[in-house]
Image (tube, rainbow over all chains, first blue to last red; front, side, top):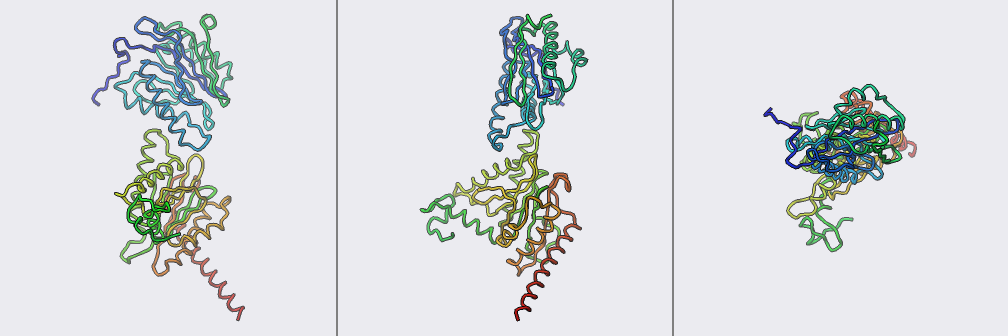
Length: 217
Length: 259
């Protein structure tokens, strides 16, 4: 190997960073994605109400961490590919989360030298129910029951491992994510603002928001 | 109906006054002279079969396979200009691999047929090329179960439960119409396919033929396109020839009764 170095800190001068806490969790009826809302340029908070949960298809979303520009561009590309792909499917059939995650992976891997993107792709499809795929920097793909990523996630690995339960009810899962992200925000200077969540089930999409007064203990 | 399109038939892509591309229709004629191929969509899989006309005693039996595979889960058989068929399959393999390398999952059969239909139609648009001289029968199993398609030189592509092409297609089609596609299994269809090919061979009876049968089924082949095992082929061949003898005996009996 020629030594392709991937530097997590190599944002260009003035580039905007999604120093972040993001996660996605499988639960009984589908999947819930959660994220904080802080975008920073150095120590200045460029946006304190960012939406890091981006739609790729009807019930497929992604959580973005790393360079804001890179992740927005990649998410747009994946959305485009999924649109063409679904146009060619039989009527009323929807693409699976696996397809979206694989397209993310293809783009992130082939452009690894130029991208700083850590993405969690999660969605609900009729065939497989909820699925969560983690695509870290470098472009590998990992299917998991739940995934955490971003700079803030490092502080909550232990807590999440202890407190995750498979097949949770919706309210339990919301509470799980709220507590996890609240801790991550507490310890990580690059994460903060509001906690946004997106719930994906066979009934469709539900968006939630939690303000500091509620989640900050 | 056929007619000679004087003046408009020598150039591909040119429309005649009654709106036909004659080169495409002439391509169908090439197909009609080829050995018969058939496809059967069963409850649990697909069976493809072909009447391989033997032109020379020097050809090695069992070699020179006519039925080809696209990816692992799709089989193709065709009648007409055999080199054109190989080109078609090659393109199918490219399409399937490109899809797989991007989406990391095998291509579904309808999706592939969409791409191949577009590809074949392309060759009807330019007078610097000629249309494909084959009709291909493509069968495969994907997440939605078994699929069977037939694609013509014009690029027209339809899904079927039973398909036949080549010289004996009329005989084959009338036999195929008698089958019950809701209940037939691949094991039964293998024998039926052998019988149909044997009957369709009547249209080509001045030449010898070799029977080639392949199948795809989740139980028998784990969803992969494979040639049927030698013993099953021998059994099918025997079944086809016996059925034939029975039919002949019945005819003889009828004649006796009359006199």
